[in-house]
Image (cartoon, rainbow, N blue to C red):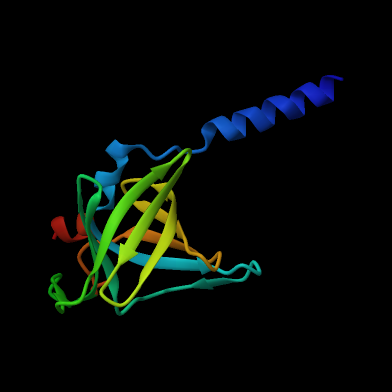
Amino acid sequence: MKNSLKILFVCLFLVSCQQKITTEDIQKLNGYWEIEKVTFDEGEDKEYKMNENFDYFKIANNEGIRRKVRPQFNGTFLFNEDYENVKVRFDKDHVYLDYSTPYAKWTEELLKLTDESMLIKNDQNKEYEYKKAGPINLSGEDEAAQKTK
């Protein structure tokens, strides 16, 4: 009986720790995001060491755009005129990103969103782990080391 109570307590604790995304959290989407890893439906992972393209989100009042951008060595990003319209939709305990272009419509589920990371699942059950992108540093030194020079 004691073991059952311990297991129940641990399960309740884990469920309560799961992040719930709120409307206030959506502003964290804004900015540049780099894919770190894709987890496929079969459980396989593909890690990305470096990406040619990042995703740029600009969302206000649960609507906005997502566009593919290409980072440059000077810390800026190149982009073209193509983008996807995005609407953020809350449905019970789930948050969805509804995309549309003149050619297609699709939905992804936003599973996790923090200041530094994001997890999105598409309709093929692929999970995309993103990290917030910053300026590109090719020197191999971190910012603190550069300031001490």
